[in-house]
Length: 68
Image (cartoon, rainbow, N blue to C red; front, side, top):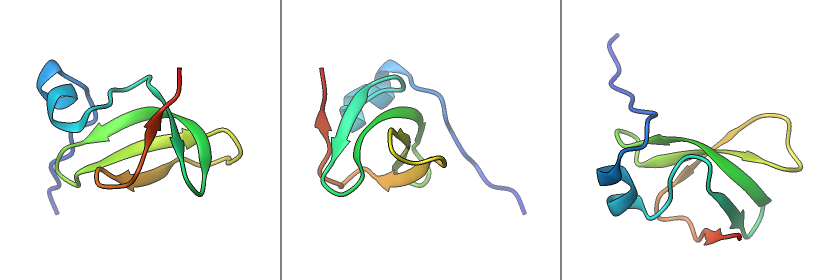
């Protein structure tokens, strides 16, 4: 099975999603974390949350806030 996955961030990706790899974000349930990947095919971010060992895939429509 062939799956097209894009985990790199380009200027086009940032324009469409609002976040890029390396951005710090806050999720209402999981708390703060760092975006480690952007998957345009699945329309989701891969995020390493501070309180979790494994990364989580969070869809673009999730309510994320940028943390400075």
